[in-house]
Length: 155
Image 1 (cartoon, one colour):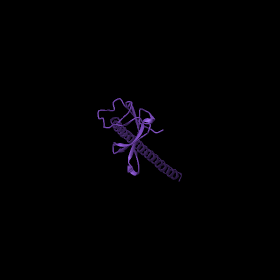
Image 2 (cartoon, helix red, strand yellow):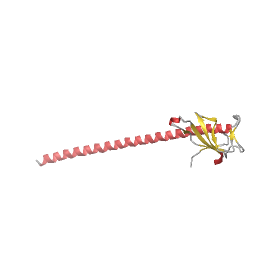
Image 3 (cartoon, one colour):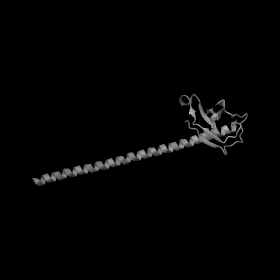
Image 4 (cartoon, helix red, strand yellow):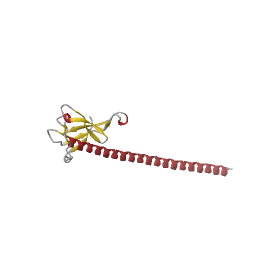
């Protein structure tokens, strides 16, 4: 009788240990899968951010080139700070605009209306203290060489 009870206890212990072991393995596998998904999402978010930063840099360079070719003032343009494009209204239906600061001088700042990818000539709000104004004709020979272009971050 004692042998039967011991045998049953050993069988039950074996089953309990086996189920416990399988549960632990299952939990570890699930945790690994969750960690892999998190890592993959973080990697995708990082790639998306890098892609957006490249796109913003490209937009800033297009706007900077337009500014250099269409705006002039008493001093040569050495640096430009350009904000992100602001989309006004729902889905940009109210138009888009961007802020530009020339030579790190708050007085030489203005907002440009942006139509698609190109600023609209005449579509600008230029502060009364700004010493820069639109050229009569676009000067295509001007380039961005030697001009520092930065993202204008509002403080």
